[in-house]
Amino acid sequence: MPNARGCRCAPGLWVAVLLSLAAAGADAQSRGERLLQSAHALLERGLNDQASDEYHDAINALDDSERIAEARYGLAIAQERSGQAENAIDTLAAIPVDLAFEFRTDTDVLLMTLLARSDRSDEALDAAERVLARTDHAAWPAAASLSVELLQRLERHRDAAHTFERTRDILSD
Image (cartoon, rainbow, N blue to C red):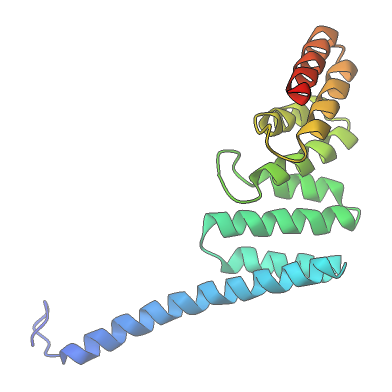
């Protein structure tokens, strides 16, 4: 059957070409998934430097933005555990705040904590606000408490009192 250029190719050849292209894409994605799983296992064992390397490789191999965000979150944990708080902050900051993925709130909890430790109270409050929007999350009380502390540091005492009252009301329900 002639193609657009007039070449005759067997229909089976086109199917084979398309299947091989699809398989190449699947191999790249499965490689990224394997790297991500390996990085998670290394992180669980406390092998943070090796986990960081695997997470970097996974980020480069993955195509799905949610899986890349998950890899960045894992990388940030490994970096934080290795004493690289600023790198962890940069890694978390690379995850779009409007991206919804499984670890979105956990990402904001870690970011909020790291920023607060780095005396970046205004930025920490931004992350805390995203956590406070999720009253069903286990870290909500800690985020509320940290928000009050950050507002006090910034001498926003009225806002701190309001956040404290709101927290007390929500926790008493």
